[in-house]
Length: 221
Ligand code: HEM
Image (cartoon, rainbow, N blue to C red):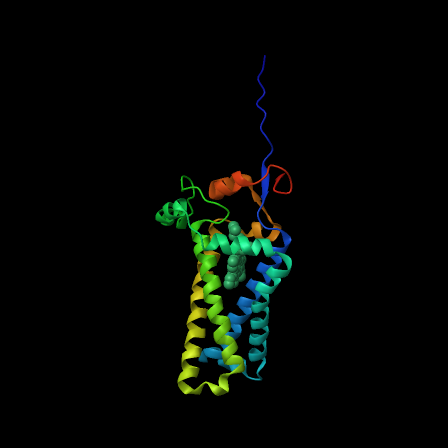
């Protein structure tokens, strides 16, 4: 008598619904627009592109889009925003253990890393930093936009320094964010919403275990 081994078809896990994917697209587009037009306004080798004032207008458009992101979250994904904020600012003992192995993760190896929830400790650190640094960018940017004339030379220099350094910090964070997106082939999760269960278990086992077994959380490929 032959024994047949039944293997379940591979499953996919819902990581991002439509709303957070739209919000992320607006965030990413606005930030890149801000970065490019900000460099044109600031950096002399490319400042000739600022002639005509278009980059100033585009920079303000980028700023409006960037500030729209929290409002979008309030409208289309309030629960997701709450979860994202809560997760980003709360670290448990597995997160601390995970951070001790961060070099291994940096090299692209997740096997045997301490178990993680929906966000790993590195993502928590990234997202929390984005929230805090973005607040500095927005406040200093609004002051530069609407109250530049009343600042005085020192006030202007200080506000511009806060604005530029905050932008630099977010850019460094973005380089890391893109590096891990590339190393862990994470982009399809953001574009399609789903990631393979096997990968999800390797990187976020506590989160996968907490999800209900039915669709749309877990679907067959
Ligand atoms: C421009 C190109 C970008 C790409 C390709 C990209 C890619 C991604 C990917 C793949 C994820 C999902 C990671 C995962 O959970 O496995 C993600 C999430 C996230 N990214 Fe980006 N990102 C970009 C720009 C940015 C920028 C500029 C920011 C912030 C200024 C940002 C902030 C975030 C945040 C906060 C999340 C978590 C979203 C949530 O949990 O709802 N990203 N990104």
